[in-house]
View (tube, rainbow over the protein chains, first blue to last red):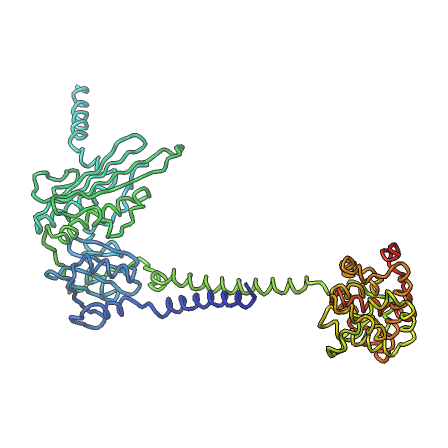
Length: 138
Length: 414
C-alpha cells in the first residue's frame, strides 16, 4: 500500500468520524421536536401541549423511549410517565389510541403529582409506590 | 399469682407471631407500607378492569427460603385462582454466600390467563432487571407489578384506564428533587464518542504513516559505489557514442579473427591510433545497441575479420571481450567457451595485450578532451553494461600509461 493510499484511508476514517459527529450534534433533537414531527397536535397552552396517536399507549411509550431516552420512567395502571431534563411526558389511553401530554418539568410535576409525587420529588399524597425499602436477602 | 400475671403476655406474644405471617413474609422485598400501597393500586385496577393481579417473589437466601406475596386482595395474599382473568409476576432470586464462587442470580416471568401478557411483553418495557440482585430489588419489582394493568390493556384482555392531569394548584411542598441530567448526552453521547473516536483514529493513523515514512527515508543508505578508484583516468568513462551505421558495425567484429593469423597486424594497429580511436568511439556507440565487442578492435583488422564477423556475433564479441577484459570480467569469462575460434593461441597473448594497449590508446585519445566527463559515472560504467561495456571500459582503463598484465586465466592458457 503506497503512502498516498494510506493517507487516503486515514482521511476516510477521519471523514466518517466527522460525519458521525456532525450527525450526533445536529441530527438529533429534543423531545418536543420529536413529538411535533411524529404525533398530531390536539391542543396547546403555553408549554403544555397535547398530542394524539392511533397507536396504543404501550407502543407509543416504546417508540418515544427508543427515540428519545428519558432520564427516568414511572408506571401507573393508567399511564406511562417519562422524565426529561426540562420536560415531563405522560402517555395515557384515549379510546383505542393514545394521548400524549408534554409539560415543562415544574408544571408537569404539578399536573401529574398524584402519579409521580414522592418519586421524582417531594410532596404529593405519598400513595405512590417508591420502593427503596429494606431490600432483599443479604 | 406472679405466674398467672406473666402467662398472659406470653400467650399474647405467641398469638401475635402466628397472626401476622403475611407482614413477616412481605418484609423480604417490600416495606409493609409499600406492599400495602402496591396491593391497593392493584385493587383499583382490578375494580376497573375485572382482572386479578398479583406478585410472587421467591428468594433463596443462602439456602434459606423466603418469599414475598401480594395481590389485589392485599399484601401477603396470592392471586385468586378462581379469577377468570389473572396476571401474576413471578420473580426468583438466589443469593449465594460471599465465599462462594457462584454469583447471585435472578429471573422473572409473567403468568396470565389465556391471551394475557407474557414475559416478552414485560421485557419490552426495558426495566432494569439487573437490579434484582442489587441493593433495591423492590424498585424494579414494584414498577413491574404496577405495569401489569397496562400490559393487560395492551393485550386486549382488559380495558385501558385513562388518566387526566390535575388542574388544581399543586401544594407548596411539591418540588422536583431528582436531577435528570442532560438529554443530549443521554441520547447522543454514544454517537458523539464514536465520531470523536473515529476522527482520532484517522489522525493517529495518518501521523503514524508519516512517521514511518520519514524513518524509512532516513534509513535508506547513501549509494556507495562498488569501486572508487584512487585516480580516475580520463579514459575511465567514455560516453556512449551514437549508434554507428550498419556498415561500420562489422568492423570491430572482424578484429578477433584478424588477430589470430596476423599478429603483426596487431602491431600495425598500435601504430594507427586515430583509426583505432574512432573505432573505440564507434564501439562505444555500438555497445549501447549490440553485444559487439568490437569496441576494442581497430579498423585495420576489420576487413580481414569480416568473414569471421559473419559467423557469429556472440563468439566474436566473446573473443573481443576475452582479449580486452584482462580484468577477468565474468562476462568475458562466460563467453570464453564460445570464443574458441577467436581465442588467440599462446602466441597471440602478446598480440592480445598489444591490441588492448592499442585500443586503450585510441580510447585515451578520443576522450582526451574530456577527462572529467569520463570520470563522472565511474560506478556505472564498470557495472552498467557488464558484457560489452566492461570490456571497453576495462580496456580503456588500462590506458596508455598502464599496461595491465594479462589476467591469470589468459596467462594460463598461454
